[in-house]
Image 1 (spheres, rainbow, N blue to C red):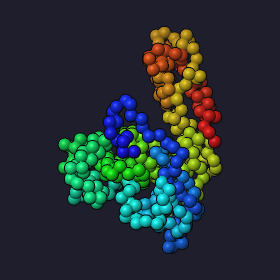
Image 2 (cartoon, rainbow, N blue to C red; image 1 turned 90 degrees about the vertical axis):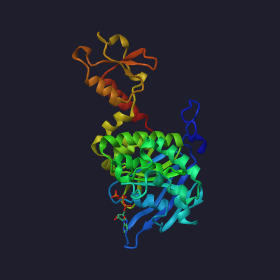
Image 3 (cartoon, helix red, strand yellow; image 1 turned 120 degrees about the horizontal axis):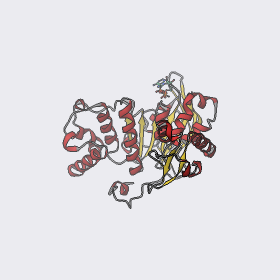
Image 4 (cartoon, protein in one colour; image 1 turned 180 degrees about the vertical axis):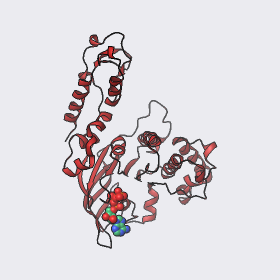
Length: 348
Ligand SMILES: Nc1ncnc2c1ncn2[C@@H]1O[C@H](COP(=O)(O)OP(=O)(O)OP(=O)(O)O)[C@@H](O)[C@H]1O
């Protein structure tokens, strides 16, 4: 992974892609708390290398327990958890935690340490020299969009909630851990800042190839960020593990359907795209031609463009390819056809 962190602006750099290799394996994992609560009954689940896997489900279904067993903040009662093939219950939990990044809601930054000192926490524990640590801190602050000259010497109380969250992410990535655990990572950020942070985080995750297991109660966040989604019901029972579109289009059980709620088609609009096969001919566009949308644009964009058309356009928007040439036209019926096609194509 380290090689992918350098020169990411060069066009030739290939980002790490998800493989079938397992980064984390839960094998018959159970957690019963001392008070008798069975938070996780018998969980078997694999997280693939370089993927972002969202754990979702109703409050109290065992998401955080599952996450915290992965870095042994909670000890499993039974079963095995393998990190890149190695049974994590065997070694030293403190050494394990230094190999796995962890980001939580409200971040938990050290209030009396500067931004730079916070980010340098784990490198410090690992005994990195000053020059290496300083260079890494600068690189990470740049990566999360906080100019080191402005932010390195500030204290957490001198930052906005979103900036604190970025520092939390930078701190968790400091030693380039292959695996990152995140528990409601963007929960404390306002909705507009949250979407921006999610998108930026996704970009960073793709560049670094970090395997991320994250907990969210927000299905939209799971759909936006997750390569796959694991839907839990009570007792850490795995109801469905699939790509976002599959979960939305083909919920595997009533529990999944109930968790997704009413908004599945609307959420699918953000995932499905305008494809050549959904288009009508360009000759049907009325003059004057409205602004075209892009081939491959999310259906949400197409929907907004169609809704904003003047009456003279007869509900038809031109669609242009990458070169800007108009290749067809699109209507509200096209949106329905595209949604249907997408739902059918989502592998069950
Ligand atoms: N330390 C503990 N001792 C006893 N029971 C616990 C403990 N921590 C969690 N639980 C219980 O275990 C179950 C699962 O909790 P967990 O925090 O894993 O759920 P969650 O899905 O993350 O919930 P939320 O979405 O509300 O954060 C709940 O019934 C909870 O009350």
